[in-house]
Image 1: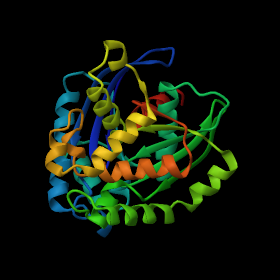
Image 2 (image 1 turned 120 degrees about the vertical axis):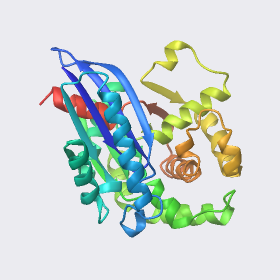
Image 3 (image 1 turned 90 degrees about the vertical axis):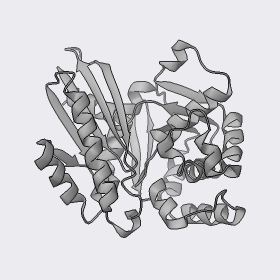
Image 4 (image 1 turned 90 degrees about the horizontal axis):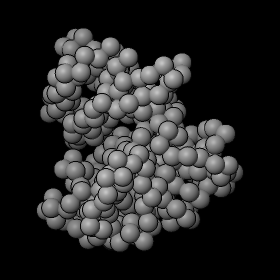
Length: 309
């Protein structure tokens, strides 16, 4: 069976097309993405602006065009924080359903966290050590604590980078005072996480989705490229010293400089600084001792759930 998964995130609408087998495995046939910046200009006012609305519709049109090349048996589309938390999110979904005859499921933060865990555990082997998973989105950030026995704790925070960008609108480059204010705000919103950290005490951090994919690509580019084996790997260990150097470079960078940064997707140029502030804050606050990027997240988790339901 061939499945097409459309993950309608706040920054990017992602497409995954897979072929499944009887042993509940799947082969990736195609990956696509379209930058939509659905939260730009309205996320903290709980609206999708007309411009963002139009970008989202065009992204679905592009993905449907790609899907038609693969003769898929089923298309599944999910929508996350950038749609579920907006006043006109349902109107956006209905427009897609009417225009493309495509059913869209708006998933909760809890469902999102569960799918992320399902996706990550296919890319990275867990052991009995408790591990913290972080998925950074535009509308929300999901934290999950898990080990090889399963998911232990999960929570979705409305701290997505599109929200932070809209709230703080930092200078170019960002100032020391703006960094401090962003960190203080992040700190004030994570009390529930801190309680869970005290209970489960994870030291390993797994990061997934666009921000961590960008960290991987930029660091690899700085280190002179990669072998085919690493390029096709579903995970990548990020050296904390390499990340610390990248973080400082991002803090000091201007928008124009980031446009020329190898490995950084255009859709993340505006948001990557605040995203890195968030990640750096978590690493230092929680005394993280290792960081691994997972190439699998919601989309792959949804395939896993379908195959095992």
